[in-house]
Image 1 (cartoon, helix red, strand yellow):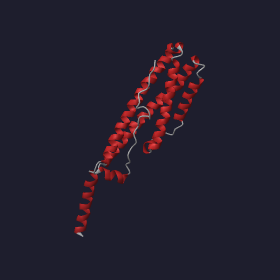
Image 2 (cartoon, one colour):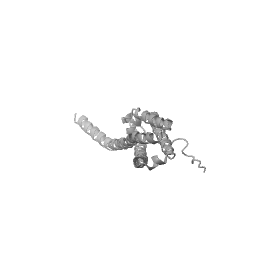
Image 3 (cartoon, one colour):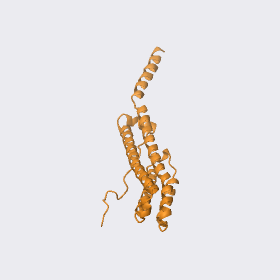
Image 4 (tube, helix red, strand yellow):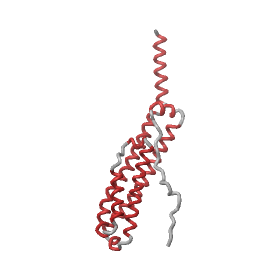
Length: 195
């Protein structure tokens, strides 16, 4: 009986030591860091989405003949708003890619809208338009920073779950690799500028 009790104590002690060094808590911390970084990406995209209707309304007053561009911006914003964005996106690279594509469409539509404004000197001189343009530019910078921070958190997490012995416990507890934000196809080529 005494040996059985000693065996139970030894097994409990060994298990405690083994699991205390497994890094489970570290994996939890890193997973939460990825989730927090993802929340910041969402916040910045939401900020941009909130600016779009104001920008479209200001441009509408000046650029009545640019209905197609205004429609593209509105449609792209609607596509982004229609996506369900939750933690599931982090677990599924296909959903993350779909989210990235919708955001890229909105970015492209906004770029065309800003380009159209060049044809309307009164619009370019409008202080409300100028202010919205500055806010949009700042938001785009914030989005880039948030995406970089997300990728850094995902890299730290992914590296952690692949290192021995944590990789064994990560597999046991269901810690899967996180996807990254990646550059859009075609961005590796410099744009052609002609005068």
